[in-house]
Image 1 (tube, helix red, strand yellow):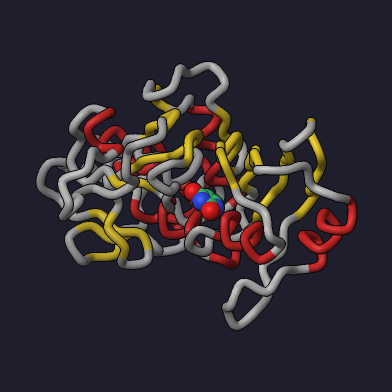
Image 2 (cartoon, helix red, strand yellow):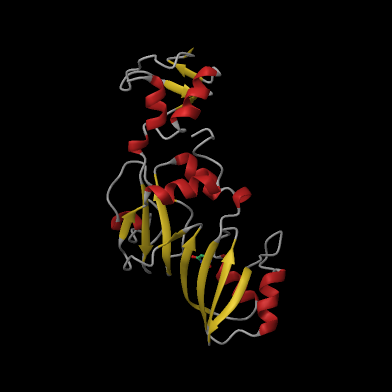
Length: 240
Ligand code: URA
């Protein structure tokens, strides 16, 4: 296969951008810089790199969106033999959850074997939006909604904040987090003297699973993958 076609197929860049990478000497085949577009490569045996990073065929990367039910742990293996999210989805090598939800939390969880995307989505720098629907043991008051916005001391080195906390009905509120500290929402409400009686993640970045029953999954659409990559600055025009 022609090198420029292979690069485009791997999803590292558009065909035109891939040609720029080749011309500017950023692509190597088996350790040798290659600057000719028409070079033929054997994709089963040749080691093709962009800036010394191996380029793998896009077809091998999988992106699964699961509507996690309660009673399932978000890890690949559980030493206590509790049911894991992996038991609800197809067995795909290298697939891991992006971040985590507690055992008793429901909702959107992404699983992928795309290590670079997972790394970037999990990096605090990108402040990915995570929207939660929280049910409390009693109605929240306006002063506490303000406290959530300003920051609540949960015993860490810095306060934990929520964006756009809004009362939905009675004991329910919706809020957005931009970080993913352990049991963050429960700890924030404990600090304000509430108890979280149910927790559902409604959205992760642009991903929602309103179309999925609890414990069901689907592959992301091409459009969702492109949007996610764009949010964390990788994909077209970038290094992949
Ligand atoms: N905050 C929590 O307390 N639990 C979760 O599962 C997610 C956010």
